[in-house]
Length: 113
Image (cartoon, one colour):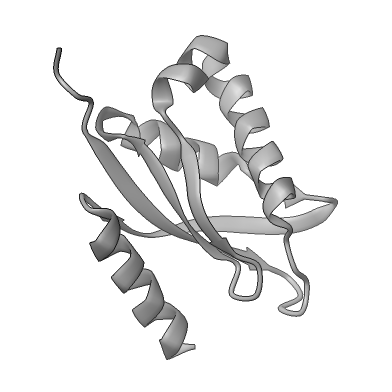
C-alpha cells in the first residue's frame, strides 16, 4: 500500500482590528464546520486536514493536507469569513512539500512583520 503524500500550507488570518486575537480552538471549529458544509463528512475525512501549528499573536499557522486536496483546502479557507463573530479573511501564504521548509518560510514571514 502506498503512503499518501502530504503537503503543508502556511496561512495567515487577517482581521479588521489587528489587536483582535483568534483562538486556536475557534479556528479549528470553523475549519471543520466549513469543510463539512462544502465537502460532507466523507470529503472532510479524506482531506487529511490537520492544524500542525498556530500562533495566536501573529495569527499564522500550518495546515497539513493530502496532496490532492489543495484546491479543496483553498476553497475552505476562502469560505471562512467569520470566527467568533469577528470578520476575518484567511489567506494562504505558501505551500511546501516538507514541514521543515514550511516552518522556515513561516518564521521568515513572521520576522518580517
